[in-house]
Image 1 (cartoon, rainbow, N blue to C red):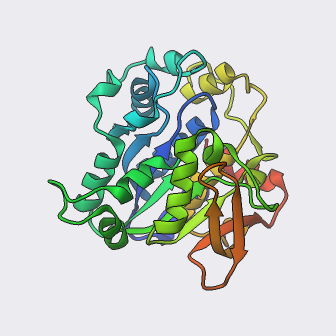
Image 2 (image 1 turned 90 degrees about the vertical axis):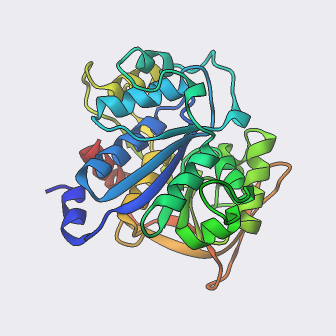
Amino acid sequence: MDLFDEIRITRRTPVNLLHGTDWWTDCDDAAALRLLLRAHKAGIIRLLGIGINSVMEASAPSVSAFCTAEGVEIPIGVDTAARRPGENCRYQRLLAAYPHSVKRNEDCPEAWKLYRKALAGCEGKADILDVGFPQIIMELLQSGPDEFSPLTGIELVKEKVNRVWLMAGKWDEDNGKEYNLSAYPLCSEAGDFLCRSCPVPIIFLGYEIGEDVITLPKEDEADLLWLAFKAHGSAKGRASWDPMTALLAITQSPETSGYTLVRGRAKVDPATGENSFTEDPAGSHSYVKRNFPPEYYAAVINSLI
């Protein structure tokens, strides 16, 4: 019995989840999506949509191919404000050569509109998980009433979202700096906006948590996750920031997943992306600290991917 089997026994209804990913050059995004798709198939989450927040030519087709290979079709949205150069996309063109239903980025809605539609239409509330740049959530919060809901973005999130899980920041030092909040101006601005304006709790998994947790799928030339790892140059394993954050959102319990929560108030410098944190037991922000050695978390993820 694996972890998903254990969760399925105790969880009566699936957790609704929206997933944001930069799906750019790193393969840990693919490992995170593998976990989410398998949890979706196991019936412990209901993956409502995937928002791509670093968009290149083969982004949506390669995500679609990855989902198709897993036997799942999930709505895909793209953030057209976040287009990135495509020369270093590494595994995207490789995956896009496999069967897929979404042929072009242009066939997808804007990610923030996909989120509005999904939230307005889902039964109960949902969580938002993002392992990339946080601007899709900012755009959702800044959105106005539309054909899906008469609520503003802030109102819709307050009514329909439980919490936000973010792979972002570096929380083991003052003025930490991490790529997802500092790569370019828009993501720094988004990090600042979320910390100031998000009406629901935010839980961060920082750079320091996944840096030395090395995970690796089994070598299999027919497996698109293995091909992504190999194309990335990680045939011996990769740091696990994104799958660790995905697994937190799947389990819904940092404590039982081997973490301690530090509660307080997070800030992100909108100019530099540097993050800071003030501890406060009544704060709406948290970051996780590991309770076990890296091998513990790697073994759990490897057993599931």
